[in-house]
Length: 115
Image 1 (cartoon, one colour):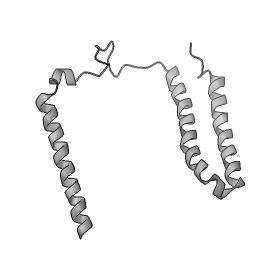
Image 2: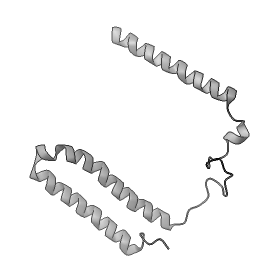
Image 3: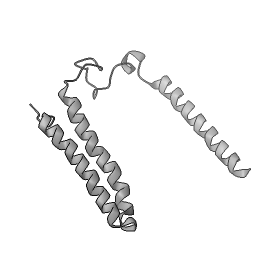
Image 4: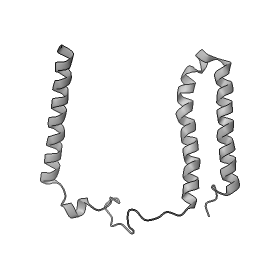
């Protein structure tokens, strides 16, 4: 029963700290008019926060996500590659080939052109 008492005490302390943080923020924080504006390093925003982006940025975002997913899968792979052996190396090269196909497709479609 002791671990549950300790966990409940931590959760209670966490609740008190979060409530105190919100109370302190509302007591000494900025007025509502300033808090509702988008943050832009202290400057006034030039356009609305939900303004539209040019369509070319969506393709570039997909390329970024491809590289991002590559890294997400490579870190755990690097940990277990010595235990699994050559099979893991072959599987990683197949995965990299699939990523390369996606990047080549994006390059062919012009997603990597900046102008």
